[in-house]
Image 1 (cartoon, helix red, strand yellow):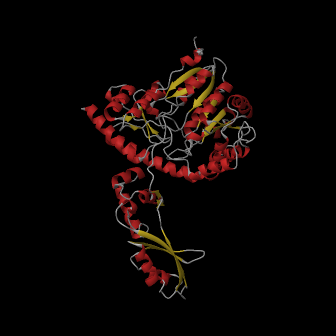
Image 2 (cartoon, each protein chain N blue to C red; image 1 turned 30 degrees about the vertical axis):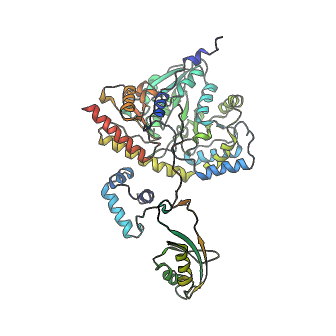
Image 3 (tube, rainbow over the protein chains, first blue to last red; image 1 turned 180 degrees about the vertical axis):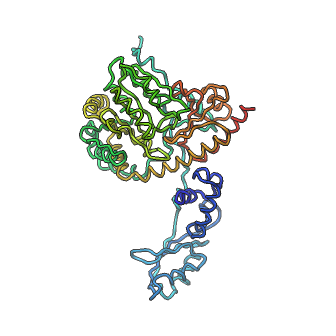
Length: 160
Length: 387
């Protein structure tokens, strides 16, 4: 049930408990227990909402920053990653294989704030060698959801 | 001038499903639960392979029997799933959907007056195709108390010395019934004893819940007397690609290929290339869709239970077949009133044969959200009828 439960709530975390139990073919208590376990084990890390902020009047600017760093002895990339992810404006930090080391995503209210963060905070960290900042111009698809397209039923009338 | 129309064709009744759909298309807030095709898009990697085939200019006919690599993949697939070996050279024919295979299979085998046994309720094409082939149709009325399985007794009593073919439609449209291995063994015995042939329509085979689909052709002594029909429409959500296949004894496939080559030439080329990808890398897509269907199936069965509507647990396809006999209306009356009052279209069981009387086919090839609204309306409707 675990994997199927995760797959369902990954797409719709607001589904109600009763319905979840029915479609998974188990009792409500079993679902509750499993959810509690998944939270405890840190497998379920949160129940977020996917919002297309572009459709609101709120200004938000997103950037991806490629960061090259010097790994530290005994701690590898973890220490510097921690330094970076502790900034609240940082939305995510990934360790990446290839031409650079860390991919940092940032959300701010303006370009200025982002450039301020990169020049004042990020670049000045001792083990940061270089940064390359890419601004996101438009989000087409996020978390597996196509943002601008309504899914229409295109099936035509046909018999049999 | 009178337009020449064959008597045989005149006698074919138009399908009973159509009427309801026509009304649905005129109602604004109507919900249809009538469609018999997946609501999923064809998985992208399969579509991508189709696009690639276009780009490479794969726009010519294929050989009549279908692309050799596709027939090889079909052969591998059946070997893997059912442990039946079909020679990709001469025991497999790629067709325009499973429906073409039904049609030409019957035409290739039936002489005028031969009896074809058709268990009902079942898919609406068998009877007219058998009619056109010149068969005398013998219907078996499947029973709800047997979970709409075909029993050995029912089969035995339908067999005469003119019986040539049994059509075996499992997993079943419209009931969702499946036949497990023990069920099939019972009837295989009688089929062999009476020396008849089977057309096994396994188009919903991949959509079997609580167990794996078993093909009757996998039983001892049955491969040589079975025409196995399957296709890509239901399992891979590829209805519009129009692609199916038939597997059977060499001599039969050879004769069917003659009809196919003169009437059709070959199945669509682009679809055949995409289908190779489906068979090679599509297992996971099928599984994901199946999990979704199963969730909806459980949802509907629980909804019926909550509203006290009798329904046996169907373990295949994407249909449920609840019983509406308690309301003292015919299936058609019930479906019509349900559509008028609540704007939900379900297909009356009688569209699939007389024995569908008292039942309703509800398709769950719809999102859970749609089904939820539809079940709220059904509940309201049923409660109103009971007061």
